[in-house]
Amino acid sequence: MSMKPISVEEAKKIATDKKLVPAMVDKTDGILQFTKKGGGNERLKEISWDEFKTKLEQRKLSIYESSGWMKIMGK
Image 1 (cartoon, rainbow, N blue to C red):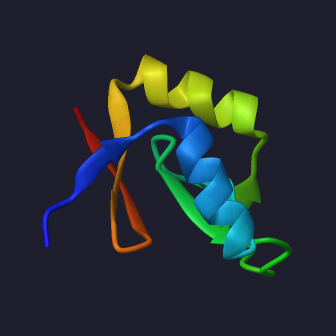
Image 2 (image 1 turned 90 degrees about the vertical axis):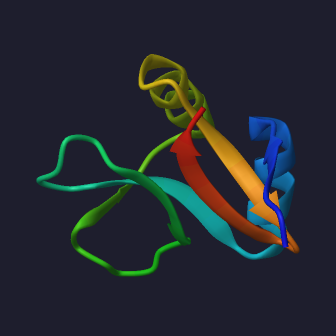
């Protein structure tokens, strides 16, 4: 399966269906990932979609998707 780049808006639709939200990993250099809403992982700080989009742009990252699975990687 090949992964294709998707927009933040497309990622938001997929994430909403899977009850996921964007998050930053605490005590890292701003690693971004998706997590379950209210998942309870103390190392993950949920962030807004606007902040997520800004961080992606600042770090030159994109969201890639394949069969509903999403991954955040360099462009």
